[in-house]
Image 1 (cartoon, rainbow, N blue to C red):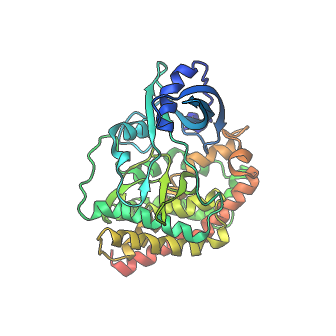
Image 2 (image 1 turned 180 degrees about the horizontal axis):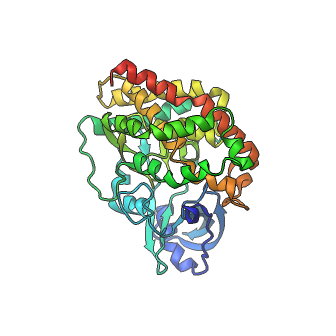
Image 3 (image 1 turned 120 degrees about the vertical axis):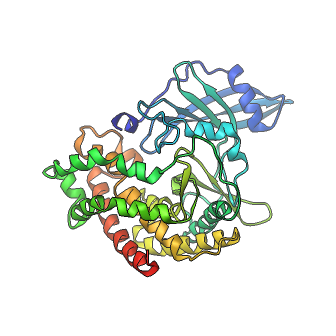
Length: 386
C-alpha cells in the first residue's frame, strides 16, 4: 500500500494543440474549434491512490470568436498487486466504468462528469479526459444540502433494490468493505508493535486504542451482518470533496459525483458513511454538527429509497450506515499508519488536510469518540433481532 499512497507527478510533455483539439471540441460541443493556447496545473487529489490529476485550461478559436475552455485529465497508473477486477483497490475500475457507458445513464438524482476520451498509454497508464464540473452552491454547503445529496444516493441505491437489474460488469467491486478491512491486517499488527511511538499513542489515546483492537476481533460478525442486509450497487466514495451541486433549470439540484474507483456491490445505507464521516474527517463539515448531519442524511436517504419504491424497515438503513463504520475504523488503518511511522510522511499533510499531523491525529481521535458507531450498531442489532 505504501506505493499507492505516494502522490504522483506525470509528465505531459507530448501534449500539443493537435492532440487537444478533438477533446476540446467535445467540451465545447463544436466541430470547428481549434486550440489557440493552453496551460496545465496539478490538482490536489487527496492521498493519491495511484492517480495524478491535472486541470487544463485555455482558449479556442471558433468562427472568429475566442472561447475559453477547461478540462480535467486524470492519469491512472498501474499499481502492483491491484489487478483483480473485483478487488476494492482495482486500479482500472473507473476507466472500465466510463468505457462501459454505464456512467452515462445512472438512476436517481446523480450523474458522473462527461468523459471525452480514454487513452491507454505505452507506459501502461490510462488517461481519462473529463468534464470540469463547477459547483453551483460554492465550497461551503448549507448542512441541509447533504440531505438532498443523500436523497439522490437513496434513489440510486433504491433503483437496484426495487427491480432494476443489477449490472453484471466484471470490474465492479465485490465484498468491498470486507476486503478493505482485511487489507489492514498487517497494519493492525504493526500498530500493536508501535504503541511506543508518540504519534501512534496520540492517535489511540483515551479508549480509542482499546476499541480499535476490540472491533478488529469482532470484525467477522460485523461483516456478516452487512452481508445479510438488502444489497444494491454503491458508489462508495460520495464525500464532500467528490460532490458537486448542479442546479437544474427547472429548480432543484442534481448531484455530480467524481471518482468512481471503488464502485461495486454493497448493503443499503453504506453510501452514507463517506457522506458523513468522510466529509467530517476532511474538515468539510464541523464535527460539532456531525449528529445533525447524520439525521439529515438518514432522513434524506430513506426518502430516496422510498422514491424508488423500497418499503423495507428504515432501521435497516441505519444499521447499514453504522455497520459500515468498520470501513473507516479498521479499513483505513493501512492508509493512516504511514502518516505516523514514516519520515517524511507519504503525503503533504498540510496540503491535503490543512493542518499538522499532530492536529490531524487529535481530530481523528475525537471523531472516533464522537461517532461511537459500535454502540449504535449493537443497539440496532438488538432491536432488529439480528
